[in-house]
Structure formats: C-alpha cells, structure tokens
Image (cartoon, rainbow, N blue to C red):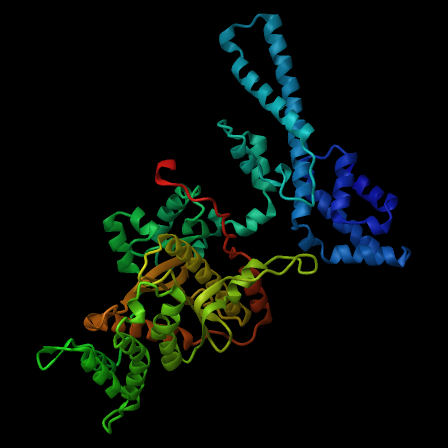
Length: 560
C-alpha cells in the first residue's frame, strides 16, 4: 500500500511540489501506515527518486528535481521538519494501536460482566487504566495540529519525553519500548552521549572503572550540567566522579593513571629557586629588593647558556608587570575595582601565553578568542544551504599548533578580588566542553592522515578563580578523562611572591608536557587510502558534545 502511494504521489503531484516531507505527508494521509513500515517507505522513496532521475523519458526539470532530492536524501532526512513528519506517523500508529487495544479490553469487560466471572479474576483495574490512557491519547491526537515551521511540537518529541511530560508512573508498554529503540529522534542519537558510545575496545587504563562510571552516569541523567552525560570522567580531587568513588577506589584510580610529569632542566630549577627566595642576607625582601632581582634577570652573564638565558627572559616577562604593580600606592592587581578583563590581560594570561610562545612555539590569542573546534561541533550535520551557520564559543586564552589544531584553552572566572560563584560554575561547565570539542577535532585530524594511534591525543586547559589558576588536561580512554595537573597561585602582595615557587615549577612541567604532545611522532604507515577512509568512517561513532542546556531563573535557597 505504501509503495503504491509513493508511486501515485510522483504521478499526481507536479514536480515543483516534490519533497521528502510532502511525500511522507501524502503516504501518511492515504494509507494505514505502521511505524515498522517507515524504514521500507524511505528506502522505496529513495529508489523511486533514483529511477526518475535515471529515466530519460521524464521531463528534464522533473528529472533534475528528483536527482537533487536523491543526492541529498540521507542528509535531508535528518532535518527537524522531516523528523517531525516521521514522529507524527509514529504517533498516529501508536494512537491507532491503542484504539484497538481499547476496543479489545471493552470486549473482555463486557464478557466478564455477562459471564459473571469472579471479581478476583477480572482485569478491571488494568482495563480502567488502559481505557483512561486511550481516551487521553485520543483527546491529544484530536487537538494536536502540528505546525512544521514553528517550534518543536509534541509529535516531534520522543516517547520518553512525552511520557515524562505527562508524568506517567506506569511502565512503558512493549509497543512503546519498540518505538523508543527503533524510532528515537535522530538528533537525540547525534547529540546525546549514549551507553553504547563508550568505546570499550579503546580502553587502556581505566577498564576496571568503566562499569562504575556507567552506574554514576545513569544516576546523573537528570542533572543536565553533569559532564558525565557527555561521557566525561571527572577525576579531579573535587570532581563529581571522584567524589562518587570511595577513598580507596580513588587512590587506586590515581595509581593506574598515566604519569605526564616532565623533567625540568636543572638550570631552570636553580634559577626559579634562587629568584623566589624570600630573603637576602637573612632579611626579608622589600619591594626594592624584588625590583633589583627582577631587573637582574635581563642581564646575561658569560656563564649563562642558551637554556639559562631562555628561562631568565621568560621570568622577566611574566614578573616585571607584577613587580611594577606592587610599586604603586594602590596595586592594580589587588585593587577592589580591578576587572576580570584588566587582571587577565595584564597579569594572568602572561604566565601561560609567554611560556607557550617561548618554550613550545605555539601561536596564541587572549580575550574572546573564537574556538573553531566549538564552531565545527555546533555546525556539524547541518544543511548549510538552508540552515544558518552559527559561531562557536569564545575563550579567554587559546593556542594552536602549526597545523591549526587547537590544543590549549583557558578561562578566567571573574575578577581576582571578588568571588563570583555563578561565573565560576558556568566557566567550569564551558571549559570542559571546549576541551572535549578540541580533543574530538584533534582525533579527526589524526584519522584523516591515517594515524593508527589516533586516540592517543591530549588537550590542555587552565581555569582561573581569584588569583589561582588550575592546570587541566583531557584525553580519551574509552571515555573522556578530565584531570588536574596542578595549580599556580599568583601573588596578591609582594610579601607573598616567594610562595609562587612551587606553582612556577609545576607550570614549567605543564608547559613541557604540552611540548611533548606537540612534538609527538605521528605513527603512520605507507599511504593506504582504504585505511584512511575507514578511520574517517569510525569518527562518526564519536558523538559530538551535547548542546548547552537552556538557562533557567536562579532560585533562592528557600525555594529549592
């Protein structure tokens, strides 16, 4: 029946009215369509379009129209308005099946009454529940007028969402479960991080903890801001997954985590330790002493090697603005009205951007730098002829390699002298998503060149809060691993400068870890086009980061 309807659609409708949506509407309105028939209908429609485009007896414009629809069929079928029609057909089938169920249960109830069957054998409660559900669905179906051009209607939502919105406490029927498994909205498949997206065949380190993570992820489904919904395992000390583990489990996880510590040259360590001593001749350093010590960094001695001169030059670049600020009556770095923009552009970013430039050779930008990996994710799967291209996220610091891979992203959450918890929470959420996007693009680039170790990629980031800057990294081990490398606390007073020593040494280790990642040898064999195409195909299994949830009005404590 459906195949005949498709054939009659192309005969009765003029070619200017041909479209996938119109054809599905035509089939739905003229036939008793079952949800199980939708895939065969789409296949037959595609076959019919191919035959028209290949038939030379057809009108030239009709052939061109059929060919244009056929060539973009697979991409077009994922568009929201087409999915809307498919969901309408699914709901129509569901309502029809419930009507039949209602009629059958009514017959059973009548037989029960006529035969005077014992009350304990009757299905009265179940019958009443089924009848109520059918009547509700009939009312919904009669009052539902779907507008494909407006916002998402009930028909476009998956059965799971519809069930939640109706607040049904009953378990899903076998028919509904079948719909959910086979006909779930295509966009949900693309954007949601499902259980089967966990690539267990690529797990090298945390195989033991994947079942625990799946259990944790299931409990976090209702929390739209949980990074576990994007398959991100947050193993930072204060991370959500780390807090879910017992202390013994977390200690074991850290023990099997790969170590990325880099060995700092002895000359670097010596200069850092000498500079950040808090006293001269057993007397605490004054601001004048700090000025003198800092100015001495630009003096190159005969004994200084290239390695020594490099670290002294870097140290002068990052510390001189800080020392100059402390020389003023009211230092700009800790003034009560210092803005986030001023602090980050004048002081914060320098410790990382200068190191990336001097020691790794990366290009970088600060303050509202567009993250292209985020833009790639947001526009992934769009029909760019009919749908608008949107911009990606903006970062406070961004660095990339010569090949254009974004490998370093950073955010500063608020000014240094005022704790902004809302900004910190939103920037934390934003940063892990930026890192995930950048890591996915790095993996894609590795696949495109046939790198067999494509999953062996790392991206790095920093998150600033007040005067502390945490150093972070993300890598993939079946799931996305989000860990903290260390932190640097920038001095807010010249008496605290000496406390920066440990943080500066850790920062240099962090920078050398980035350098090791950038200079890592790519493992490729002789050019094998089939292998490259297979790797590109495999990338489609890596699910993009979900879109940001809609922000809601904040509630007061007594309203929670």
